[in-house]
Amino acid sequence: MKELSTNTLAGLGTAPVALPEAAHLALPEKVLQFGTGVLLRGLPDYLIDKANRQGIFNGRIVVVKSTDGGDITAFTRQDGLYTLCIRGIEDGQQIEENVVSSAISRVLSAKSQWAEVLRFAQSPDLAVVISNTTEVGIQLVADDIRRTPPQSFPGKLLAVLYARWQAFGGDPTKGLVIVPTELIPDNGRKLEAILLELAHRNELEAEFIDWLETANTCCNSLVDRIVPGRPDAAMQAALEAELGYNDDLLTMSEVYRLWAIEGDDHVRQVLAFEQADKGVVVQPDIQQFRELKLRMLNGAHTLSCGLAFLSGFDTVRAAMEDEALSRFITHLMQDNLRAGIPYPVAEAVSREFGHQVLDRFRNPYIEHRWLGITLNYSAKLQMRAVATLVHYFERHRQVPQCAAVGFAAYLLFMRGTHEQDHTWYGELNGQAYPIQDEKAAYFADLWQRLDAAELTNTVLRNQSLWSHDLTTLPGFAAQVAGQLQLMLDQGVYATVVSHVGAQVSA
Image (cartoon, rainbow, N blue to C red; front, top):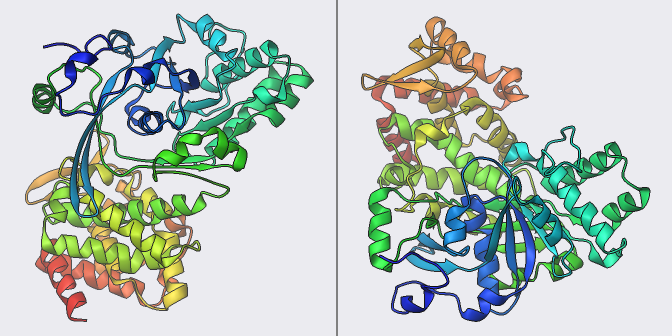
């Protein structure tokens, strides 16, 4: 079977895939991208490719492979082409779409091709920098930007900007729009601060530092799309048989996509690909998107994971196929979490976001395991749910019933029965499961000494866990303790069924 490349495109005309036109392969290189990961290929690169097909952005991407892990031979063999297989549910309809992306022009190794990276830094066509170097990539480390290459991602980026400043004599119109996509709050602001600090530590010219601050724009951004990447061997073989070619870079992604970028009119003009897809949003404040994702999507995951797992469901999709769990998660999201977001969001916006999240949870192509979501359970609850709970009480003066059930299941999940190799384990139907939480020993001790009501009150008033005394929320502790006792007496799934029945009749 032929391998995907520019030379084989002409013979793929009957394949069930959207192919690029020859003109798309000749577009100028406008973007420098640090990172080759699947999230970048599945979201920013996909969106840029989509814009190119509509004649909007008209620019390709030069990718820098920053780390030593992996190699770039597949990108070289395939001329940067890769297939994105989009699968999922949107507005209740199942979506299956295949696209050969031609957004990537070439991939350079920072280790062996750094001189070529610096040459591209001097290109008049270059306008945008994108990065995804994992959360640890945006950190200040002692770095010499004159190394070949510099050690850190900020060091590499500063070297690129310094080479550009020198090449264009400090021309203020040659600054870049820089959009990090690393999953940390205020990623653009933090990256900018590191760049400035590194510039001072490297004793660069005051004129360059002024150009760095005034001619370039570092944008905060938020990305949201599940991109599992390469499918398992069986699905890969089936997809390649359907498509009629081999693709070592074939990537799976869900339908939902969001790239929210904080920027002004200048940023919007440079990032013209915003016009190509509703999933790209450029506006002065993107906090709304962060809050919706954190409080509704992440919050629903965290308040459901213990409950669903202890009810016997391994994956999010399996739980959504069960009537009782599906109703519970829907009520939790739309009635409790949406109503408790501690940030002003229009009701129509939050309700629509909730519908989109439920579609994502039902995606038959994504195997998202509940046990994996329980990792760092306590910290996730504190970050994702506590502020929502407190704000819900402030607004409605009543207990968010589904959230109380979810909190009770968390307490039960944390009941460690034995420790092995520094990991605590609980038991479900005679099978051990790991409790991967730094507070596991604390909970194991409480479960040995206290009954359900005492344990609930002890945990909820622990301000070192929640930064808040949750027993001060009227009726919450009693409701959680009552649900926990029901789970102990009749089982977790039976408690969910009875709770959903009570909610419906109410």
